[in-house]
Length: 277
Image (cartoon, rainbow, N blue to C red; front, side, top):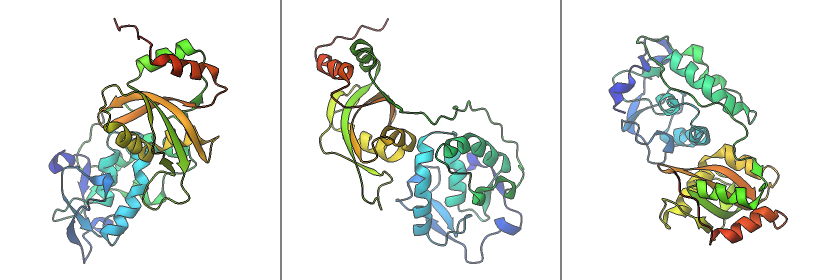
């Protein structure tokens, strides 16, 4: 969005917390701040509205919000977070409106609570100014879910083949828990070999990079898949392609005792999906 199209969601500060810091300066949004890339402006004020004194500190702290953003708990969560981590560089600080904070909080806090994280005190909504401009919320919000990508056992090889047919991609992959992950957001690494049963609209070379992005960003899904397999394991995942993102809809542990899954994988190479009417 163009920066000035954001002003209906943000308020110009009037004293106190929102006045420019005496040593406030404009700096480019760092390329490493994935949270706030392509948001409609290129420069940010430092210190930011969360008190981070350096771009490096803001980058480090903002990274922890990427998995939540990947859950798409609110369509304006990125605008809200970036107004704090990377405030737009105008002649005055611009803060988020209270109603924007409350709307993002009400949609995203239930997702955070799935993992035992409360809405942080530092983002308490009553500290932000009441709206100077009316912000109309017209979005249909997703329901909070703690159950995405719960592991399944194949009910029958026929049903599993139909799942494969309905999916854009079907991939067998191996995950290994990392001892430490200072760079990657994910706690797991992706084994070199991927067994792609179906790549759908994706080109062969895109599969690995998209799976890697899913692994790093979709915290809910990966956590649920590995809950009973904390060291990792081999999984079969199916799902849809939504723009640059992969959305995993079903996940199975790859194990010999799941006879239906084994049979479906064997039959898939020669299986013909029924045409969609």
